[in-house]
Length: 491
Image (cartoon, rainbow, N blue to C red; front, top):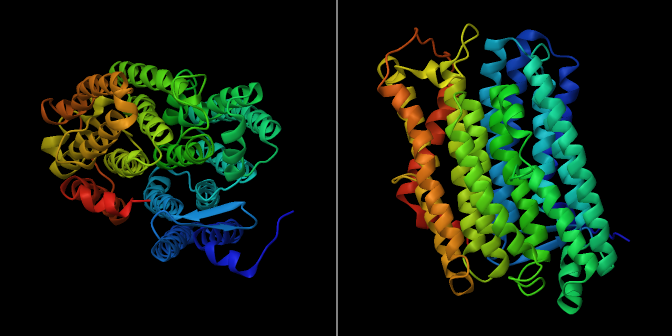
């Protein structure tokens, strides 16, 4: 039985704002006309700003390491959840700015796009604040259903429809595995509360039901983050979706899935609950992480379409994030969790920025998604080439970008865990980072060392320019002052 007290509603700030503004936007679309679409984007950004303010206010009211439970433990409010809510709202606001320019240029002005995006962000916040398996499931389905529709937002695009169908079918299978895994975990522990599961498994350890549940949950979350071998939907969905939606999937959806994995695997199944080195999730994830990093990077090397290249790059980054997740799970008292959150921020900002450049330099005559379309951009538009180079360097983990310190802190925490038990995995990660440099620099080479194949006509959009400047500044600022960000992430 869920008991609700008035104080519980005080911690619903970001979730309530995103939900209410999202519903308002869905209703507003029914009365909107073409020349009022810009107002929908402005209202979306305003809602995201309010959600960011509410998240920061709640974050400041909480002590490091402290938490508050609400709605009889269904929600768990701590600094990590508020940081993630800030990240989700911020990404959503930036994507809304990219979406307005892209919709206008490519004539797919769908007003419900903004409402769906805010409702997806509300689902992400629910995942981040989850204290119960039921809350995680509701949050994942709220997020996923909205993103399925957004993937096919360009209704006349066959590639978009194909990508959305593949994404939907794979997502439906993943949801089945998720529910089945949660049911088995409930059967093993007698509760769906994450803290209750941790207490119950501390006594019973790895029962057969627990082991089966872990396998089901690994498959379900593997689909959500596009880990190998559950990645087959990502390249087609990323290529077919409108570019702003692709950015939203790569940055926000992946971060939300990682947030759910932190709640389930690190906080409910971490530490001594399922020991490392036995039939536990950490040993399984170590193998998946190594294969995911390797296959993702090799797949990206072969791509000529920049959206597909970034899709395989996203797969490789999922493998790196799994390394941090393993570290946080086997050493909860270490820096593993902070390094994962730092990586999520650095990766998300660079992802939004990179896809923002794709939006900026394309137009309805030539979208410029092939790497050959980027030939000569350095001479034709130095500003666009410079910021794209910055994002590519951050992805590759080259200083002085946020991506360098993201990989450094994450691999460092992995080396310190379990007396070097993850050293082999760190070596695999470092070697894969070296491989990734080749395809990231392929884009840089195309911009600076090739002759232009046509005239560049970038979008004349102040909103897109703002997104690129903001993302570029954050990538550099995280590289210049990493310790300050880590102090904020001392969850």
